[in-house]
Each structure stands twice: as structure tokens, then as C-alpha cells.
Image (tube, rainbow, N blue to C red; front, side):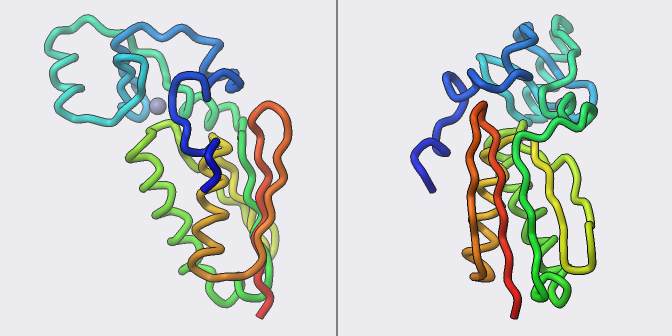
Length: 166
Ligand SMILES: [Zn+2]
């Protein structure tokens, strides 16, 4: 992976409007997905949630990922296409979903907003972060070869396309 995609937290959040618009109180538990904000980072941790709830002093604002999903505000798009997609649809979609799960374990704010079917051999995956779009493109290429392309634009938006025709 490129170096910039290894950055997490801190400065890499500067260009994400959903991370800079709201000041989260520490601690905060997202009422929708249960992600916890503490010590300037988001995580999923059942024990931590339990402890925070016991103490009782916490905020209940929705996390940036849940807000992006509600607003349908993607920061990454992955276009997948080709005859291979029609033939191996389930395998491909499962690969994409497992990659989301792996990404979420490290950073709960990385989510798939939607997987939209545009045609038999064409899908569009919308993600809450550019990083997740990058990861999905990377894993598809690694798993199934094919053609991969990244188009970066300002403001941390990434457009990825992956295709395979045979
Ligand atoms: Zn949430």
C-alpha cells in the first residue's frame, strides 16, 4: 500500500469534514453502531463500553461513519465491472465485505455505505473513507488479478475502478 494510506488518526483526518465539524466529547458512544470515542480515537470494544456506561458520564453523538451513511456522503467509490463479475458475483462481493470487516477492526470509521448494482456485470461500492476504497481495489486486484485504476482528487476523495473481462 502507499505510504499515505498507512496514516491513521491525527493529521490524516484534517480533510474529512465529518471529523472536523463536530467536537466529540471524550468519551462518546455512537448510539447506532456502538463505536467508542476515547483518547482521540474511535474503537469497538465491548469491555470499554461496559466501563463507560457504568461510570455514566458520556456523550451519545453519532459517529462520523454513521453520519456519512445517513447522509449518503461517500469519500471513496469503487467501480467494478466485466464478465468475470457476472460469473463470480458472490465470491467478489464476499471478498469486499470481508475486507470491510478487516478494515473496521482497525478503524471503526471505515464502512461500506452501499453496494449498488448498476447492471449484471457492474457494481458501484460507496465507502466512508478513501482508505477503504483503496483497500477494496487492492484486495480485488490481489485476489482476482484484472485491471485496477486509482483516481485521486482533492479533499481525500478516491475513485477506484477494477475490471476483469475473461
Ligand atoms: Zn456509529
